[in-house]
Length: 440
Image (cartoon, rainbow, N blue to C red; front, top):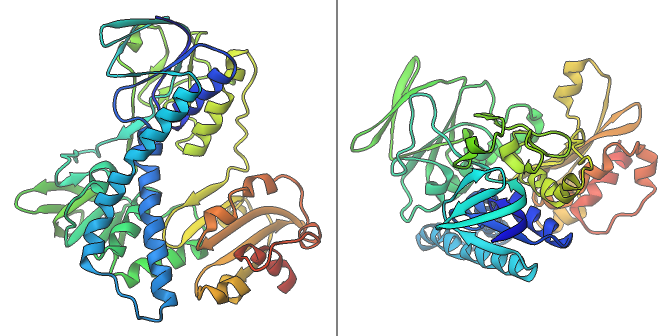
């Protein structure tokens, strides 16, 4: 079968690459060896957020009920299996949208035969252009390997049918703290081990404090500046720690280590690649002119929204046009409880560079929507350099939604006067943006 474009991988980068190519009128196919949607849509990002969305709503209901509602054991045991079942709908949605765009779907584990041919299920597919969007998979730590039963990645953790009483999460990164937020909220006693001195490194401490307070209230223990030497599995799991007593636990989750999913037969194409990914130019083009690499596999950034943007723009690369890779105002979100989100500079960065700045902050509990929702934690803060907005950050409920367009605000040279002279919907938590300026 002959195509104009073949995309390998159906995660965020691959899915949007397929739609982008189909919109240009290219005869397009997509190849997926596992579940449609990959880590971003099927096995990682989206199911994590689904679980946290449910827990967030339940906790808000508990807060508003003044103690009249309780979480039962049935709910705690029900959530993860129900979310896993629900996520099958993501594959259905992906398949539907691809079919509507006239994209052919091939399922199976294939391999390159050369720079124009891919073999799958005994079929040879030829194409003018390949787009590699195979992403990454959970990796092993030095001297610690995933066994998928007791030493888990996020994939196995989210598929647990029976919750353990206790669990160790190795890695105080975003993935680790999001998973800690889920399992601690379900009543699992969590220990987070992080080798650095702080969890969520390179994030302002004031943004992180409400997340730590929430987890500590759910009996989570943090061991920072701590090095794990090994993990042994017997009847239970033994986590051996440098200069500290070992921890005996039921399950261990490894986080923060990703391995590049290099397609089979890639050496037959002549592509330059390494364990850090496939190198690309400003068109997302490899050293082989008709082969491109998008998303995590190119090693530029391991974020789903960057993968989506690259997928949407890949047809520009095929037309020999440069693709936007300006990530200076990169918006970010951590789907913890509460959420952290924003864009631009943070205080720690400006202090490190010796740049003077001014912070204007407003507590969500003092907002009118915060009052009506009984929100008692979190804030919005604006960071200004010479009265120009250089950072906007929030910790609190719905932070990712409220600041989803924060990347647009950074770099527009907005002054505090410009912001306060514009209107915000009332009552919303977003009013905290102008309240921060007004109260300052």
